[in-house]
Image (cartoon, rainbow over all chains, first blue to last red):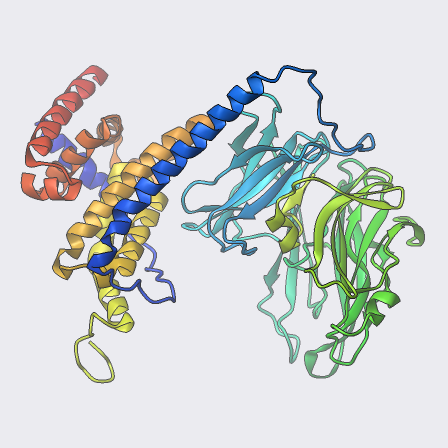
Length: 444
Length: 179
């Protein structure tokens, strides 16, 4: 058999494995205009201009280096902001160049940063057709899990991200052996020891419970990080109306508690109104014992905290206050709440009703424990969302959006540390992660 | 054909362009994905590259002077995409130490379909330098003439001839050493 025949046979056999391909996806916008002949200089001019720019920057850098060498003197180190002990130093934020925050946004990447110095440690770009869209952290400040959505399979895969600050390759990604089965998930939590991954999502039930939206089924799975095996599965049983985890906008607040023995998650219980529209709803934090047998999510879990109710300032609910948003549970079970208020351009009444604040609740009794920090000024809009808390719920890393009354500038959006009643911004956190305000896009 | 008027689509309008690109996709996409799969060994990446090639054609359609050469443009675009993906993948895999690469994961079904001997040929083919690999695949798999291969690879006919010859010799040597 000639070498040509062997090549032909092998390539045809490989090509024969392609049987189906996905349909063409064309964008909605119009094709580009016809380029005029007069514009052709752009084809030459652009690379030449880029080359000139690179040369210019290189010359400036060389000049600066030589100037620095000519100025001997004592070296003064820039002092990092004072941060209490136990606050994680490294974070991973999932961002993308388009600024869009949805799973389908292309080319999301993971940025690893140092919150004390503001330095970017590494930027991890996914392969073509892959999109990083979520992240969870273990307790060692070095281990993370990154969620990845593949355009071709429309499924989620997971990568373990290990940090070795100071090494030649400070961030290393390893694909986890978990079987891909979901397009996207609504909540993810890595156990403090980094050995178990909890994942939560909503599915349409296919059942109908009268008029109104279709009831949803909530599922929770725990995987072994090392083997990818499913260690435990829970789902909601029966028709529950609109009762559910809150979904992808604010996440499920899935958190490991008491080591790897319990999982807390946010749960919304509704009472029906006319026409299937929920008349009122109750936000709760539920807790489930991971070591106990059983597969019924609600029967196996209990309410740890019932959070204060949503306050609407008008009938259309366009102005409102939420005394508890973005719940995060500390490892001892203490629940930390943020808050949200939205008024209009001329009124500050909703912000006065519920000032932006961070409040803790007991996971045992459900009672309010302490106000960690509160804004006392007048504001038109505010959103205070915890992202991380320490074991006792004393310190919180949080997102803060504040639109002050009378200010002509755009709202302040920052991620910072809440400690001793003060909010101290952390330096250089990626703006996109802040603006999107989606849980599981930023992990400490 | 415009379903309302029965007239052929006007390629100068956005609607006509979409119809023409979609028709080209229906006719040629499968063979282009097969070509990219042969080059890369990874169907997901192959489909991405072909989608990107059609998207680029759609965007450049108004500026394309000879629409009859669209298939040649697509083939060159897919080869270029494979070259970039191959280069990017090896660099990234080295940097991130991703294990294993998608192209190295072959399902049991696919493994049975291809066969052990053919897998050895494909592994040797993918170990060739990019230009030799492209020349050998275009000449032996697609049965293109030297002129057509030169057009797709955007090189001279002489380059295709020498790259094919060297690629064949290197493959014969590698496969002999394996036995």
